[in-house]
Image (cartoon, rainbow, N blue to C red; front, side, top):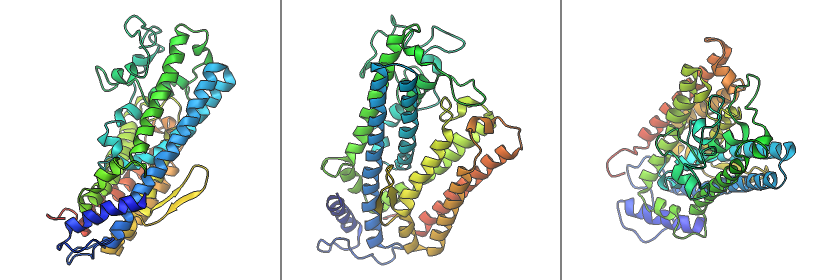
Length: 396
């Protein structure tokens, strides 16, 4: 993979340098450019490696989860149902790290697959019965929705409204846990919903199909970074001007940290004090989402990746190293602010829904507020890094 990516990068760096020198692995850093071309070359190449390895890890876990759903379909019971839920949690944690590639003009957004994979919040009544309406949802309206297959479900996703989520992690999460009215834990859906309850067969078909659709979409994104896919996204991605790639990656990390995690997933939930604004509200695993997101950002910043099996797959140049070539003090601020934010995220009391509904001004609220503040400080420091690297200067 590195050979292919390095060739693309070399072409990009040559095109953006002040002279058209003979082909080199990386051209000399042009006068006036604050950051090193050599380190940029290494960081961007490693970025592609990280994307391939992290998405591949996610695919491996979604396949394991998919197999658990097949086992539940074949032999429905409390044990196979709990195993399916356990593997959803595990697969979800591994996927969470890949969100660090969002908002950066990469495959997850360029292929418009995000809305099919991770859209939220979910209007439960669009999918299945709720406590207030036992006949609601696609599952319980066979006359209106006669087909439940891999073609129909994506078409129903966000049909008629953004909360009309029909596919992805959170639709499946609702199918496994049901609504969460439990103050001491997640939703309490029974496995018998898939055997003896009304429309049990349709519910099982929906669950299996939604899981297969999620697997299909994750495989498509991983394949776009596949080193043997010569027509894949990395080629298009790295034909862009290198300074643009660096800028979009840094802004992607900022968008995930600030607009998405700090604002949408933490501050909004804290203000509303509603489970409806919690990311993984049915399974009570929002804390896992937050921690995994920070792990993904850490991989891109510092160039490292450890697979779910515990094996260190990558330990190379990261964007922290690139920033340091332009301004070592700002780079250290980026490092320190990130680790502060990561630590404060990790100590938010669990379950998250009980923290947002706790007494206003109490320790739970203060923990979330501290994490929000630290995330924004990290975002501001990334902005300082972009300025130090002169990434917004015309011609870069």
